[in-house]
Image (cartoon, rainbow, N blue to C red; front, top):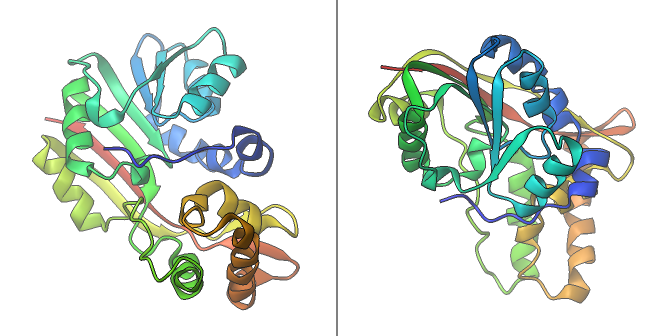
Amino acid sequence: MTAKQNWNTELYEARHSFVWQMGQGLLQLLEPKQGERILDLGCGTGQLTARIAESGSETTGLDSSPDMIGQARQNYPALRFILADASEMRFTEEFDAIFSNAALHWMLDAQKVANAMAHALKRGGRLVAELGGKGNIGRIEEALHAVLPRYNGGMPLAAKTYFPSMAAYSGVLESAGFEVRAAQLFDRPTPLEGGDGMANWLRQFSWYNFEPIAAQQREQALAEVVKNLHDSLYKDGSWSADYRRLRVVAVKT
């Protein structure tokens, strides 16, 4: 199952372009070739799908968000985009490669998604992916847990993200029939644009945590979370998010 997340595509494209800009290096690992069939899993608004297609590959973008797919189709009308849940996709040995950037951590049933990816790949097909790894946004999550229960009646925060260790995710992939060729977990502090960068990040990527709060108190809760994070994530006049990324290259056996 993919975590249901409402996306503000205007805010996403205007203030969070780092999502696809920092995925450029992942494309070098993919090395797309002319004539290959490649699936961009969790394609968002399509920027990296389009970059892959520049190689001459037959590229398909897939995302579970109607808003993301709608914007991708507007951005790149010549490309193929599919609205679907990754865990439910029904491709059978259709692709030479699957590429996924900053998407798999929204897909909570990691084993089901891995099984579906293996089923979609030809034998010998490759998976090149980057997702949030163990410890990703640790400080942000600490602030959310410290502040929000005082506003939402003590409710625990919703579990809508999956940030695995290298060993845990390698095990998931191997169980699905992949051979993991490379895995790397690394810190990647990520600059956020503008003085309201952290507030905008929370509105875009974590607003579901604020939705159980009474509407008239959400902005106050947001301001308190931002204040809680100021000392740790606001440096030299700018905000950053405490990202840790897990990068994986695997082959279907």
